[in-house]
Length: 425
Image 1 (tube, rainbow, N blue to C red):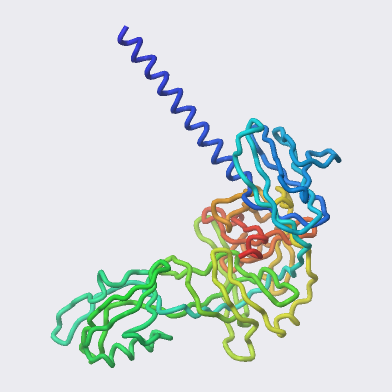
Image 2: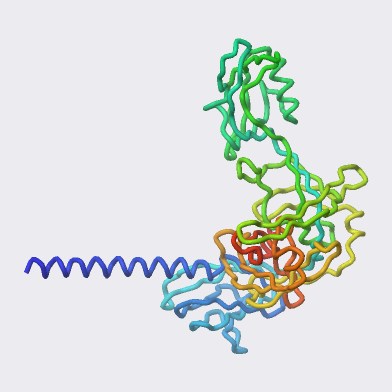
């Protein structure tokens, strides 16, 4: 009898654990498949296909957006069965809410629908030199220093952290790491009151500089105030606004996205290519030409979905391709597409295959999984290499996204971002 009760208890617990796991899995799966936000073009029918494991009811409280499931009859509420396509039509620009219900009554999720005008951008694929000026002096880490008597100490240990930004010393704003060194020496050993920015919060902390054997004063901190590299221009709009990379520029030591005051685009030449292979991502090697005559534009933002700013007339005149309509996430399909890159020395389109599409990804810059299939690009680079981040992706005559990452163990495959997420940064 006791064994029978124990068995029943075990069965009940197993049932509830299984039920909770199933509900959690379904929630996670649906969350990835159902976007939080959709853009549709005014007065143009739009369609979205969501791979849901069960039927749902979609409703819209506004009469400005009509719904459908393949029929020509507009509605403000429809039921979608598994595998059906949701049709949307908005006549007036604006922002509206859709409700997704289970069993026709339980509100499961709300989707914001923005009805927008058509948007166009020029897909570029050209390499550019990138220079970023940090907003403050970035602390890479702390280290030991040796004073005039030969003793070692680490003054900044426990005071500064990797990823901090030093903004001022004793109330004086800092513009460069050279200014920090100069100001520390002028204190002649007195305490340095540092204003730092840490995870978005500003505070003050005190550190005592140590006089070293060469007569200079140090606080035992490794710092950096700028960064540079080569990336790919994704698009340029008619007004000169640009987006590039599809991911943020991170500091190589801290791994955090560099917070910037400003930055500059420069002309660059690709001098060589190291092909990618399993476990060894390739790279484009090049030279950046720094100088007033080689400036191509100004960088205003460095974000998780790319760098953004404005190109100058010189850059605009160098672009000879036509603008394409923007394709939104619901327009992206598995199958053939192309990426534009000038790794060969001139812009060219190369075939790829879109293998996976997540309408609501955990990371915006990992919305698609793509694979390079074009023999020409495979011969040239082995697939996706460092420096190709930002290469625009084109499908069905629309600009839909940009390359962002390469798979370390398979250089032919990588991630991409929806271009609408770059445009809405």
